[in-house]
Image (cartoon, rainbow, N blue to C red):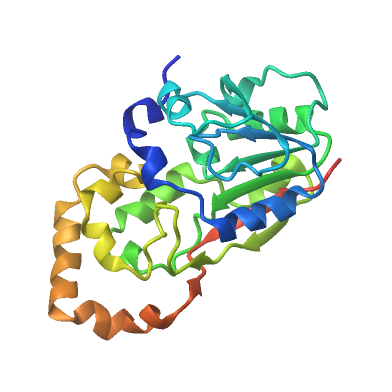
Amino acid sequence: MTALYDTIGVDYARLRRPDPRIAARIAEALGPAETVLNVGAGAGSYEPEGRRVTAVEPSAEMIRQRAPSDATVVQGFAEDLPFDDASFDAAMAVLTIHHWRDPARGLAEMRRVTRGPIVILTYDPAFRDFWLLDYVPGLAALDEVQMPPLARFQDWLGPVEISAVEIPHDCRDGFLAAYWRRPEAYLDPRLRAAMSSFRALGDVSREMARLNADLASGAWDARLGALRSREALDCGYRLVVAPAM
């Protein structure tokens, strides 16, 4: 069994640590669920404590990086979940659905095996108000291809509630927009390596050279310096919650 993150997930657990404020939003959306299915679980980020978690992840490399826990871990894919109908009180999928081969089938499988709410953290591909897209326009083009439009979640799951997840300025997780107030971080290839979008784009040396020049000259701060005093920012991340059917 092979998976994308067998290749790009090296050192992932150290660079992609769960942020407690985002974790709290996810835990709240899961409600009182005692049994939780985490699909596309990666190295186990955002799995709620104090509940019986079953994690499904296709990448052996990501499973290897999991910290010791009481979670049951199954190597497998969202599109073919090896569980009986209505096996779990709730299910979650965090920044993973854009990597699935068939999101519609994967979500149908999540609905099949889940009695209660389904909680998904994703990104709105129509969102454009993030300064990094000005420097790396290929990111927006990539999102249009791989990120499901938010309207599709209702098509796939029925009625859903969608809310913005603002990213704290000192976000501990290393996903794409985590460093919105720390632009210098994007110059570090080690940090970019933990972001699948940068991996997909390949060589971004020209784009990073432009960002580096603007930071060195003060042009970035002249245009965007007000961001350095913000505590949190909407960068396009959305929490999608489908209630119990």
